[in-house]
Length: 395
Image (cartoon, rainbow, N blue to C red; front, side, top):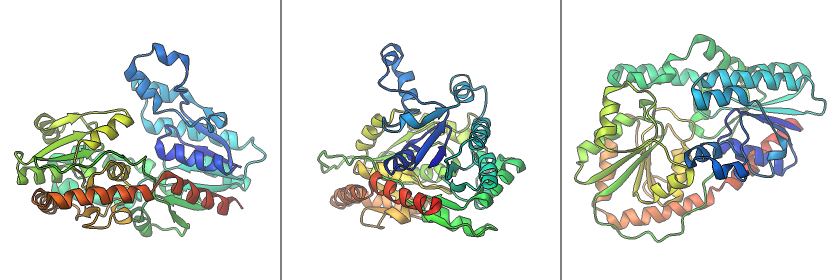
C-alpha cells in the first residue's frame, strides 16, 4: 500500500490518487482540505467560495482514503496567514509521523518541497519512495531566471523563484537524492535533471486532457482571438507574447490574459492587464468555455514542468504555440496540430500568428487536428502508466 501526500490536491494529484485507488495501491491520501461538493452546506455558501472549495475536492472513490491537516491550508486560503512552503512542510512533518506508526505500508508518493521528512522516515523503515517533480530541476531553473533578470530587468520582480533561499534549494536537492524513482510529466523536465549529481531512475508520464469539445469548429475571418492562460509573470515568457501581439497589430489580434498576477508591483505587467482583456481567475469548466471562444493559445514559457493548459486548449480546439521548455515536444506535431517556437522569440510567435491570419482554412484544419491529438492523450492513459510505475517500485 502507498501513502500519497500533497497539500492542495490539484488535477494531476487527483488523477494520481485515482490511479492508485483503481489498482488497490492507495493506502492513505494526506492533504490540506477535502471538500465534498455534494454537501448540503454548499447551498448556503457564496458561489465564489464554492468554486474555490471545489478545487479541494477528490473523486468519490478516493474520499474514504483521505486524511487532512486543514489548519495551515485554511489559514493560507482565507487569511494569507502562512505561505505555501509552510503548508508543505507542515504536511510533510505530519506524514512523517504517520509513516513511523503504519505497519502495512510499502511506499510513499510525495511531491517537490513536501517530501523531505517523509522520505527520511521512509528510508529508515525500508519504505519505497516515489518523488513527483512537477517542474524542472531547480539548478536549471535558477540559471534561466538569472539570465532573464539580466535580459528583461523590468520583469525581474515576477521571477519569484529566483528568490528561493539556500535552505529551500538544499531541501529540494536532498529530496531528490532520497527518492528511489522520480516521476516527471515531460521530456523537458527529464532533460533538466541530467545536470544533477544523482542517478535516480526517471519515469516520464505526460498528464492527460479533459473531455474533448464536440461543438462545430466554424470558419472564422475576423480578428484572431489569442489566449494566454497561466500565472502572469516572466517565467511564462509573457513579455515575449506581448511584444509579438504589438508587432502583429491590435487591430488584427484580440488578446485575453487569463490568470493572476504573480506580483502586484511590476510596471509592464500592470500596463498589460490594463491594455488587454484580463480575467484573473475562472472555475475550471468556465475556463474551458473561455478557451473555446479563442483560436490560439500561446504559452511562451521559459521554464515549465508540463503546461497542462496546452492539452486543455487542444481539447477545446485551439492551435497551441508553445516553447520546447514545456511539454510541447511531447504533445505537438509542429505545423500539424500546433507550433513549437524558441524561447525568448517574439519574432517566431508573431510569424506563426501572421501565417494563421492569412491561412484560415489551415487554422481550422489545425484546430481539428489538435482535438484529435487531445482525444488520444486522456487521463486514463496517465493513470495506467502511473499505476504501472508504482507497482514496479513497491514490488
